[in-house]
Length: 322
Image (cartoon, rainbow, N blue to C red):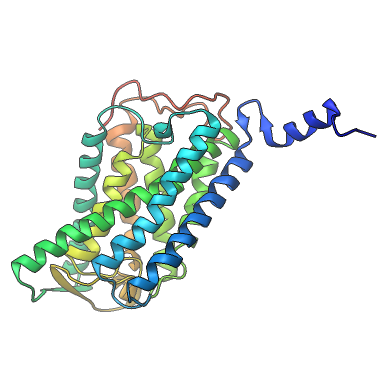
């Protein structure tokens, strides 16, 4: 029988939690999720009653900022804690590399152009009607800036959680694309409770998750994906005034009214609920391949479908991509 100080028993316990690369991937992800959930629900319990806003109603920007902070701050703290445990720099989970601001700004440009082209297509085909919202210039400017803060926080939060620490850890556990597929599906499931969400909308969220993973695959960082994510949502919610995955915001530049069959217009889901968004996501993936894919080798090459065998963060591409 092993005693209390049996070295073999200690090694057996250590083997369960630790592998050749430190904390095993599954335990690391579990600890990250527990840390995030505890802090998130604690902040939400304290902050949400102070907002006097009921989920399901149009969200004012003040509530949006508080909600996103309640999600983003725990994500930052959880990532930092895991970085200390795993003895890595905190930015090694997708925020390392050079040209961070350039990538962020280029992603923001791509995101607004992409949602604008989708909305333009729906408008030209008669599936969306746009009218100017009756607001003063001062009110529009305040809402534009406030919603910009909301969706920049949303971009940092969602990319940090779904394609930051967890994606890095899954890459060394099961391989990059198995991890991307798994958490693209989880990303879609987190939207299932949104008021007005639809099956096509959920499929588009999963597709968007894979597109963001593709940018990580090519550039080695999340800066571009954060920028794209932020302005795609900002364009829907503020600029064009459409629902965003079924969620409606207060204060926008245009007022949007879907018309025609829901499968084409997206209905209460917004542009992401239109079947036209699915080929549009494929077009975006093709453009990313043509822009990045033939210019440099992926920093994750060699661990696409199998575990990464090194503790080090992925090296930046041999040619810096922006």
